[in-house]
Structures are given as structure tokens and as C-alpha cells.
Image 1 (tube, rainbow, N blue to C red):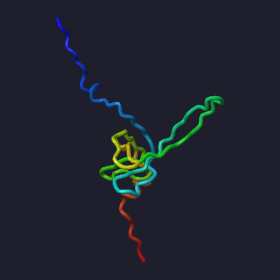
Image 2 (image 1 turned 90 degrees about the vertical axis):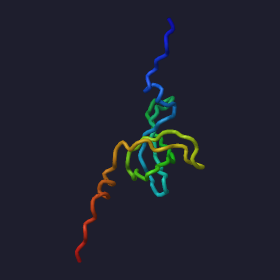
Image 3 (image 1 turned 120 degrees about the vertical axis):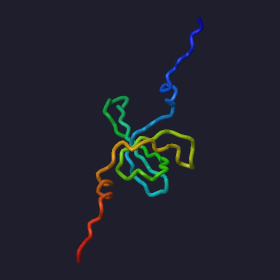
Image 4 (image 1 turned 180 degrees about the horizontal axis):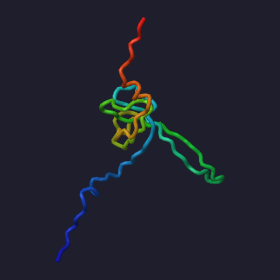
Length: 109
């Protein structure tokens, strides 16, 4: 009796593309955000935890991310000279962006 390979669709859907979580530091370009990812690594000799950060340019099709948001980005094909990442999801909105969404208060003079 021949067995068939019944792999789950969820296992096939997972991709090998790298995902990173970081904070949006700039949204000044159209459809592009700059995400700063912080890495924590133990020093090889002294074993002290060292923080280092790297900035990634990511494609944001709807311009939905704002400065201060925590986002997940996924590796993709090169979209421009520096852009090799794509916005996957916004994990947490920043408090500053929530204040900007509120209606501005009219100043009486």
C-alpha cells in the first residue's frame, strides 16, 4: 500500500524569509519607512550584553505606519537601491500617533 504525503497547508505556507521586529524612526519618504532593529548579544570574551542597532528601509504600501510604532518587517526582493524589506504588520501603535489621530482643538482668540 502506497502512502501519500499529506503535509498541512500551514506548513507549506510558511516561508523561509527572515522577519524582524523594530521601531519606526522615519516616515518622511513616500511608501517607505525606516525601521530600527535593536540586537542584544553577549560579548564573546567578557559575556556582557551589548546592544547594537541597525536601520532597515521597508516598503509600506498604504503609508499606514507612523513614527514610534513597533512593526514586523519581512525580507523580500530588492525594491530599490536600499529597500529589501516589506512591512508585514503593525504590532503596537505609539502613543504619539494616537494623539495625532485625535481631532485638533480649536484655539479661541
